[in-house]
Image (cartoon, rainbow, N blue to C red; front, top):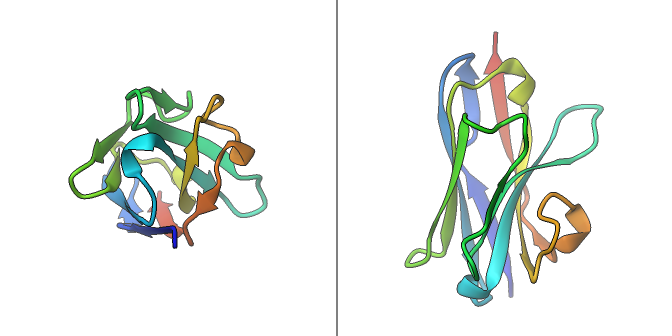
Length: 124
């Protein structure tokens, strides 16, 4: 059974940092891309970042470039999203997802399985 479990969300002041974790199980981690998406209230879900463990390609949305860093620990089957210089507009529920042979990393339908999400709230 594929499982993706996010953790690390919380409440932080603007300018602060959080590190999200996505612990994966039930599939061959090295063959999959792991993506981070977020959904703010009243908005569509958007792709934030991804890392493809099969070829190490990474993707960042323009809105987070230079502030967020994605990394993968293949020994722990865990992907991290380090978020620095957080802004109130980063407030959202953050989801991780996995997909194989992902071509367009910011597109939801490229991913097969999703976690339950973790809330990130950035206060001004």
